[in-house]
Image (cartoon, rainbow, N blue to C red; front, side, top):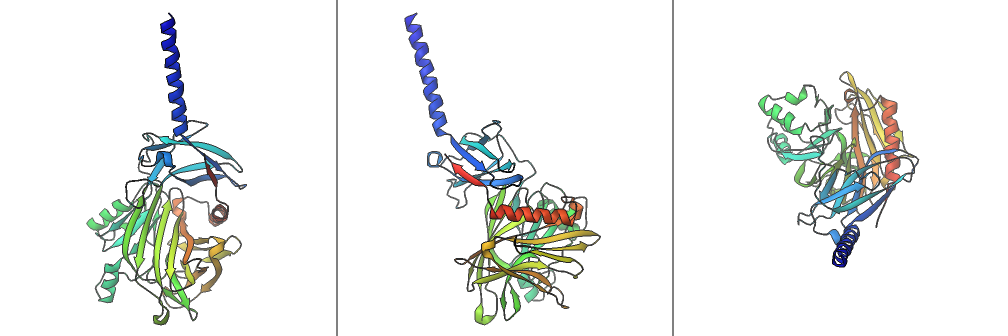
Amino acid sequence: MRLKLQYATMAMLLLLVSSCIERQNDTTVTVSNPTDLERLLETVRVDIPDHLSGITSLVVMDKETKKELLTQIVDENGDNIPESILFQVALQAGETRQYILKAGEATVSAGEVRTFGRFVPERTDDFTWENDKVAFRVYGPTAQRMVEEGIPGGTFSGGVDCWLKKVDYSIIDKWYAGNTAEPGYYHNDHGEGLDNYHVGPSLGCGGTGVMYNAELYTSKNFTAYEVLTNGPIETKFKLESAAFGPKEKEVNQLKVGSIELGSNFTKYVIHIDGSDNLTTGVTLHDKTGEINVDEKACWGDYWAPHEGKELGNAIVVDPKYYARYSEVISEEKDKSHLLMHLKAINGKVEYYAGFTWSDSQQFAGKEAWHQYLNQFAQQIQSPLVVTIQ
């Protein structure tokens, strides 16, 4: 009997030690909302702690509910050693919640609702990206060369195109496949949305340029690309482009773009050489819309009728990069813009560009969209507070 008790005691001790070791390997992540806003869906990025370094199978659980969250392991430099993990949270005003990060096989899948981006050689040489709300594309060197050589079908533009989707799943591959089989396919709405947004040589929605002698010199087509992360929560990429601007003051830029699940915006981090300032903005198309700017919140929006619907294009800037805004009204096609002028800090600027389309039914109208812009701006200025134990 004594021997059995000893074995039972030893077994209990082993279980306790095993449990303690497991808890020591867990990491507690505390996330706090410092604002009086309800943060319905926001991405949290946590650096992988040393004791979990090299582990590629990680899970995040809500400490209170024990519910596993959708996660994304991030390895931007491609060395097969994750640097960070992403997950998304919903917090009430002033709320604090805790999450457990630990080794384990993730069981939650994003399914079809995810962020996604890729190079598209089958349509000249586009680069496109999307999430569950919006989609964008830019144009590559072949498209620029075709214009320069007078070959039909090219596009010479550093502007950003908007694909007006109204479904939450990925449409990039489907629309391009449709366009390959039937040229012009994605210019018509087949129930998922369409591309009827005109960019031309304008900035589109969030392209870049530099001002010189009150004239806007827009950037050129991208010359090289690199996909850094590709969903489900974030898609991130690099775009290089040739120097642009007046000959005596040419500028070089490296653009890093990223889009997160649930957001109507792409974030741009532009590394710039040759200027202390950069300009972004949105095209005014036929100038029938309404310009709205909130300089305190650092956003500018163009709300306009768009082929029987309504479209809002906006730029939101972190205040430390914001300089001023201006409006350019021109009779020349694709030259009218709402411009947001940015000041570089250590050779870098950051801003967000995005849109909403009334047929997507994401917002009730202009006022609801502007309320979203104000909240988005406040989230930029007052990020979630994340601590790791």
